[in-house]
Image 1 (cartoon, protein in one colour):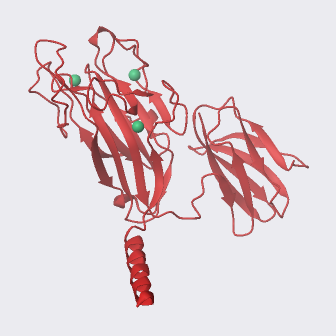
Image 2 (cartoon, protein in one colour):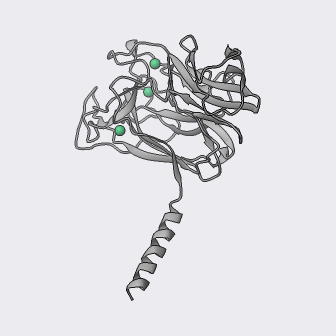
Length: 321
Ligand SMILES: [Ca+2]
Ligand SMILES: [Ca+2]
Ligand SMILES: [Ca+2]
């Protein structure tokens, strides 16, 4: 009798775990980040390069949401659209590292909130591209898809919004008056989109804050679930025969290539930009067990390291931040 009970218990456990087989491909809640820094795994780009009205950073930064609502203490990624002289044209990009989407199961989810609304409610756009540098020329011919677009308030009128999804969740216990109408603090609200269209591709997801003369937006708990593929290794280059390690990644000064596990000799090491241009090379007759390469002169971005050995070409990639 006792054995039977145990058998049933094991069966139920296996059943539920097989239903929840999705791997976490990416997760960031920003909670342990130093405030006002955004130089980690994300690639950020301040396209407008205009000054903020309240002296906030012109680009994405990390801080407490601090909008007086119930989510004020959450540590989030934030971006301001309230620019000096009430200028329009705010465009701040926050791009995730490249992710290989193995199959049609992958789903991106996150939480977001405008600082307040309805008047001066911030909107934003979530973009996916197969081009790692797309954030530098969105609107200038780069191929990308809009995954989701949130409406912004327009015309200084609390009833008028641009196209897109209108953020609906506000803390109605806290009334704020920036002008004559009453606003309420936004509450972090979940969204999710399927990434099924990108099965078999490496994609770059970009949170583009493109609101004009509003306040600020918060993004938190960015999560990508899907099927992890062992061959999609960000930091370890390998063929069936050979493997090497690359660290630290991301880096802004130098990278180390641990070649000690290679069985065959290295012929050359070349670093390419994501546009395919060779930017650095190390050609030697005698490579160290660990080759340190100075990358301080490279622009921010994603780079590929190719190591040609007698056994074939090994490739890996890193982010210069
Ligand atoms: Ca958080
Ligand atoms: Ca900006
Ligand atoms: Ca606006």
